[in-house]
Image 1: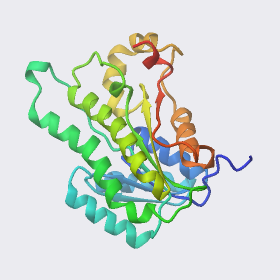
Image 2: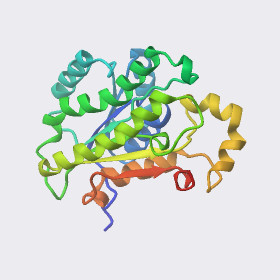
Image 3: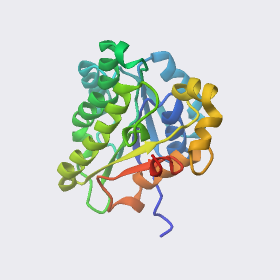
Length: 255
């Protein structure tokens, strides 16, 4: 029982791992003994995150624009040269866009869907060889970061974001059903508001209003996302696949 949440020695990949929720996840996995690769579009961001995270464990940053299929393939080749097997893939990289319905641009649709949805599918596809060769008692894990905006109807004009996250939740279940026989568990987390760069403007403008809509009356903290990831990445959840876990202080229960 004392090893249920142990991730020591596991190899993890965290996309969008240089800031926000991805950085929280990378830090938490490192503190708990995993080796972590963080991925981001910008080389400089990868280098800074790597330097900051080194104090917690073995980490390497690799730059790649995961909305681009060619760069996904290049990243997968780089990773396979370093790690013949990975245990945990956290598909967290994300983008958002807000505009009035009548003015919402095609660029805002394509950028968000490519980053939030296409990258999840094609990166998981590209890393399948490294995710295989696990056992049913200790399967590899794919953890997709969705959003409560994919479970509820947002009040903001982030149409492509909410659509992409709802699709991530469905894709999670679809992949889970197809990959269970290959000892790969696929689950999703649907976070509510956390303190990140993506939510900074929203929280600055409407923090009290947002907090008051959350039954637990607070914003998500690093411990909340890290604890959920450790559960989904460890022996504690080896019999769970295809789940979408709201991490929202109860917000989705009243929307």
